[in-house]
Image 1: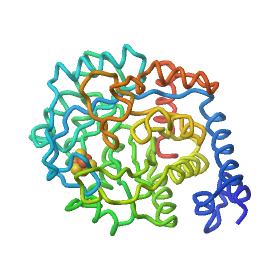
Image 2: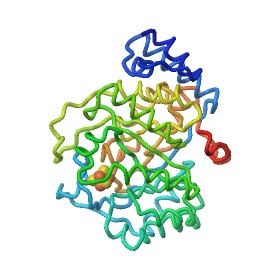
Image 3: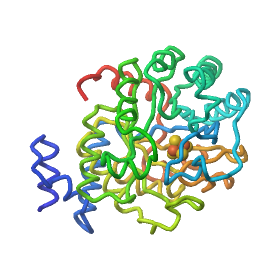
Image 4: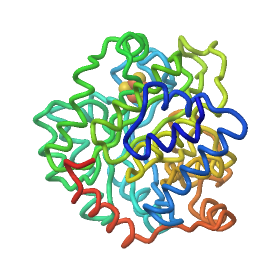
Length: 350
Ligand code: SF4
């Protein structure tokens, strides 16, 4: 199948069976054509600006035992839970450094989840009120009743990744968890008035057809931010011996998402390949740099729990330098606010 023709059909809303799969399987010149089309679509929608997200992983405790996760319940690792003062100080330092949003992420920490996620929601409220930044809450799966409280506390975004839309694969990855309950998370978040992010993992055992179906489902739900991240085998997990899949499939997934859903926010995560992989992800059509972490703050990442953190390469300054080299720049808070207003105004039409 001709990849350029497939891209054209997808952009006109006339996709044929196999069009998306042909982008996800593209090589050499076809892959470059997909990246080029994705950049064109991104620049037309957002300009040559990237939004910067800081990352505060404030609790590595978790009640779940996901097969792929370094911090799974049974890993026996030392864990931390940051105090409210530490979370506020980290968030303020990220805001001062120039991020547009702070992503408050935790494992499903029983202390934070208790009593309708009271502690976690309280932290979101304090960061909103005392730091005054846009906030994404990534607390894992919650009960439906907690969403109104989270929205009322001021969360702009709620993030919860399905990881895959293949139910069989899901059950082997997110052991003992409900596929449908996780599906409900983004719908409940949006119903409560928040923006929502979904994500999938690439190279974790899915076929190209399965990946294509996950992308269609993820975008079809209407989430305003969607992401694909390469699976990184983690030591101490049942998947530690899996062959690392390489990053090419993730780049094609980013390009495919941009071509299918040009008006969504699509992250380039520093948590997969560090700063070295940023340019390729932006060149594939991403427009958000996520997992910016200040150095010397004793904070873990998720996929790569130490990569580029202590050397400062995941700092705003370093990211801004790279954007500059690419003829891009970091968005201002006003530009980010305007983008969120546009996304909110399109609610129901994405
Ligand atoms: S992926 Fe999230 S929910 Fe699953 S074990 Fe890790 S921290 Fe817990």
